[in-house]
Image 1 (cartoon, rainbow, N blue to C red):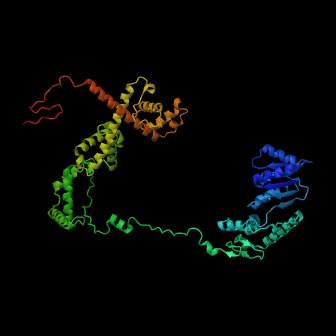
Image 2 (tube, rainbow, N blue to C red):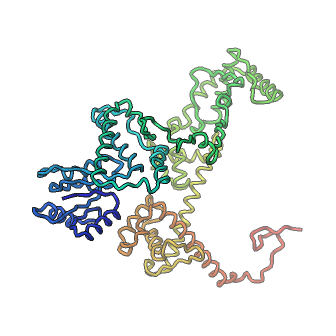
Length: 557
C-alpha cells in the first residue's frame, strides 16, 4: 500500500484519474476534504484487508495528525522548499503500529530547478543539525535573494533547450532507481563534508561536475557579468538632501535674550519699600510719595540715570536728562509725608492677591458684570460684601490698571457669549411656543441647508430635547447623547446613536441658525402686516430741531 504526497490539486486529480482508469481504488485528502470524510478515508485505508491501493495527500496536510501506519511506500511527487514539511509527510507512515519497512521515493526531473530545491533543502537540514539544534544560531537565518532565485531557474536550462531525441533513453525503472540512489549518496556525502563555517556562507551557485563553483553570470561558457551593467535603466543617483535651518540658533537666542545689545542697569530701589500692586487700588497720592522716596534714595547714593539703548540718540539723551533732573531735584520725605504714606498704605485692598483678582475677572467673564451673586460665589475666600466693595472700586478706577485693555476685552467677550446664549434661548422658546406637541409637530425650514446625513425626525428630536434639557446647561450635549441612546424611536438608528457630543453640538448649532432665520422672517412678515403706527402717517418733520422719524435732530438753517 502506498501514500503519495503532492503540492498541487490538479496533479492529484490527474493521478486519481489514472488510478481509476487502471482499476486501482484510492483515497484522497487535501484542504477541501471535510473532517468526517477525512477520518473515514483514513480508517478505510488502515482497515485489515483494505482494497485501497493509493492514499493521495497534500504535502502541507502532512502535519494534521494523520496516521497511515499500514503504508509501506511513501512517494514524494514534488518536493517542498521547506524540508521539515517533507519530513512530516514521511512521518505519516512511520507511526506506532507500523510492522513493515517503509521505503521513501522522491521523484525529481533531471537538470531542472527541482535539483536546486532538493539541494537547498538538504543544506537547511544540515544547517539545522550543526547550528540550530546546538543553540548557536548566529546570522544563519538567510533567505533567498533575487540572484539565487535566477540561478536556480537557469540551472539546467541549456539541457532543456538544447535537448534532442538522442538524450531521451529507454532506461527501465530499476536503472532509474539505481541512478537516483547513486545521486542521493553523492549529495549525502557532499553535505557531510560541509562544515559549520561553510554553511554559514553557502550560496546556490551552479556546481559543475568537476566540483568547481560557477558564477550565476556564466551561461553556456559566456560570462554575462559585464553585459549585466548594460541591461535596463541606469541608476541615477538622487541629489543629497540638504537640511536648511530656518534660523541660526545662536542668533535666535542672542536676539531673544538681547545679548548683543548692552542692557541698561537696573535702577536701584530703597530697601524695605512695600510691594504695591495696581489691582489693589491704593490712593493715587501713595504712588506720588513712593516715587519721591525712590528718587531721593537714588540721589543719596549718587546714582546716574543711564541711556536707554532701545531709543535713538536724541531721544535717549533727552530722556536721560529728564530722569537725571528728577533725581537731582528730589528731596527726602518729611515726617508729615512719612506719616501720610503709612496711613495711605492701609487704605487699599491689601488682602487681595493676584489669585483673588484673577478669580474676579474670570467671574465677570463667565457671568457678566451685573450678576453679582454668582461673582461673589466664584471668588473664594472673600465675603459677598468684600467682593461687592471691590467691584464698585474696580469699575470706578479700572483705567488705572496697566492691562486694562486686555482685561476689558476678556470681560466683553464673555458678556457677548452670555447675550448669545440668551438670544438662542429666546429663539428656541419662540419656536416651541408655536406647537402644542413639538416632539411630533415641529417643522424646520431647511431651505438649501437640509444635508444628507440627518433626517427630519432626528433634527426634531435634537431641537426639542435641547430645549427641554436647557441650552445653557453645562455638559448638555453629553446628556443629549444619552437621551438619544435611550430613545425608543432610535433603537435601530445606528447613525444618530453613534454620534459624538461634538458632532451633536455642531448639528444643533446649524439647526439653531435655521430657527433664528425662520423667526426673523416671521417677525418681518408680521411687521409688514401691522403697518405704520397710528398717528404717524403723513406727519411732517418739525423745523425747530426736534427729532425727526429717524431719531436725529434736524439741523436749523
